Image 1 (cartoon, rainbow, N blue to C red):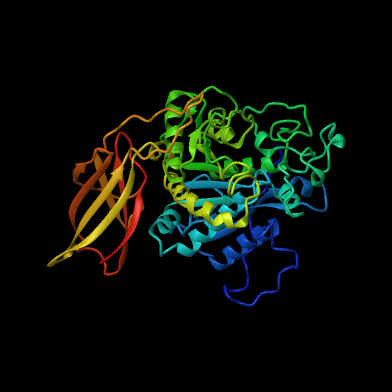
Image 2 (tube, rainbow, N blue to C red):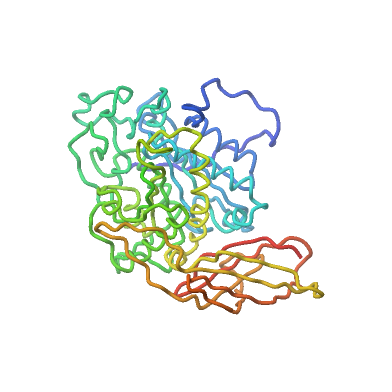
Length: 492
């Protein structure tokens, strides 16, 4: 595999709000509002300029067309994170240490156009709400969110070149023997190219149909787009798969991977290449996280064989899981063809609904990144209330609710998604203004456990040592594992 250089984009010289040269006259959108590759890339540069303390744009490689000469695109990523306060470990450094990572990708299949709009809006939501929304603030304070808005830019430019969009799935590599018999991608579905989500090296499988939609390439990781993603992700997170135990290093992993697709309204976890299930200790953790994601969206969670009826060799998720020891998931956003807001090319008016549905699950995914194999198994805090105590200005009543039974539907076909066991929340804790991994977490007395699994904890706490103004409170709950923190602002 060829090496791929990772480089931050040059710093902008114009101050935010200053006059800039007009953009090129190429269309910024297509099909009613979907953003082109050029506009997606302009967007991440604009965000990096407007929010220099939160955002850094990077180039991590070149598309297949660009490796062949004129044409094609650089491969771009955006890192979002608040300053770490540690000059030796900048929040958005391309390094395996530092803050935990949430790695989010869209449009690895070019025709799945809604996925790039989800990441576009997530970028804007995090940056514009930092310091105003407690979860946006908590996520960027404690996590580096790495977003690849266009994992297959050559294919995406074909999609956007016609109205209605061309249903190009693959990249534009036409060098495989027999490609000359394929259609040009602009002329139909059976065009040349490589399915990048069948090209990753773990459990890659050869394919003979070079014109088919899932042609995996001439070898594992043969494509520069795949190589770029492997290099980027390997640079951001250590290899947490143990060659000694042949399992992930559950206690050490500090990154989580999510790839956005459409359509089907399902949440997928490994294995993707086979009907077999992962080892039980891996399966429990993967299925827990997927089912918790599915609770937010009401999508069905399972392995592809269970919920889609097909396997997928050489996928990103199997590589991130088995090749790097990271919990990795894929979402298939939207209903089937023929349904409202279904298929590969839903009306642009559907995007707002998709994003509102996905946002809580995206924030949950980011919140488990510090210890994903553990936090994903633990319960979830569902509410935090901090109220004044009459006549006692330095005291507050703290009420926290948590629940360990918040799971969406699971696949029932083989290999069926395991049904999570009922557990009891035995501990609730909080921190004020301290990152979740630092300091002492204060206990809160559990006062009731309802039949639906809702646990309530309440305490009277002192705020005498806090400066006047707004503070950020984190709360978490515990069964046999700690769950992720939820955050809320309160004022002293």
